[in-house]
Length: 500
Image 1 (cartoon, rainbow, N blue to C red):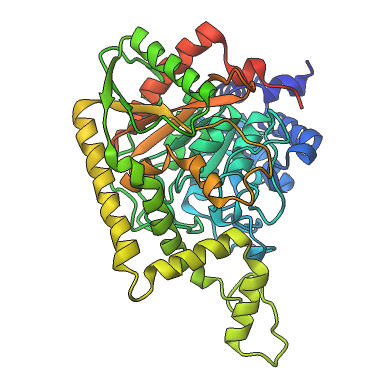
Image 2 (image 1 turned 180 degrees about the vertical axis):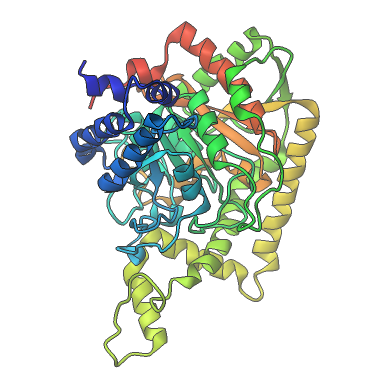
């Protein structure tokens, strides 16, 4: 194994420790990951833009700090792949859409700024479903991303680029966003760790909006501890975001270092299995539940009947909010402008720009949302969906009176072949069956690997759900499961992932 290969296989925590001690320089670490990207990303297509010069400049600044004897943060010098939905000053931010092709934001998102202040090295921007609308990263205007486990299969979505970058060892850390499962579902199908923090736990300022009451940025990594370290960097109150929670960040790193489930009550929801679930996924989930029992947890059966309505409610609420949020892309203020030859009205230019700039899935959701919000249909569709949302929230509240956390499969199947569901939106939407209820209620959730499905040898994810502002429970349970699983069967990504 070459020196660069050894570097890219390190965890984020190990990398930071070696940089802090002087065993490695931040520049050497950054160059190793840039070399890895150059070697494999033509096949994977995890990145839309590589900020080589910016990344090396950040790394040099970290090394200069260490040489001056300044204290380095817990992730100083560690490379990161940033989902192309967060504004980054002077660096292209496209949200996977032609309508923002070439746009250079004049400011940093709060999350981007916090990463820079923590001396995390941002390698570049990752591929995603256009405006975060999708479950496969096939809806990107710049082409699909491949799953490093099998490049003919999807890496999940909308944050498939971030998850694929981790699984391909192009970066030890990544950032995703989760509106209905877009951090957790890619994590599940790539054998990585992804966390959706409590809604409002991470600032949305500078994150291009899809569905404002559902969107949430969060950490992606290869281990639970690495995710916790990143979570602590990006979380916290932000006065620039009116939905930001003004409360202390839960002690997620401490929880990740002290994983333990003894005496915890763990809920299993009967609605999270049945028709449409792959046999191998259920097998690995049942093994995970049994592992939790062996580790000292009490398993409690739960009935949450409103969860069966979550998918329908989500696909009314999210499109309704997106139809409002995407109205700003009119071809008049920034981004793409089509048909402005002096002979057309502003309305015509806007229509032509949206026709050229938005892809089919974005148009589908905007039209669905506009219809759901229209006069005469608002109460029947959008209003009814919000009532279902309340029922789902109440089901969670009742459940968390009985249990400390809830577990489920993260997604009903392993990664499906690219193109298999492209012409069947309903089949595509079913990929988020287990993840959507969490977003509707605003709770916290994590996906972590729980083995490979026996029928296809592809990763399976275990979802852990915690009440709002109890994010530390995710890491306490996740760390215990990860340690026990690795001791018994080995880490699937670190020991069994195929080489590219």
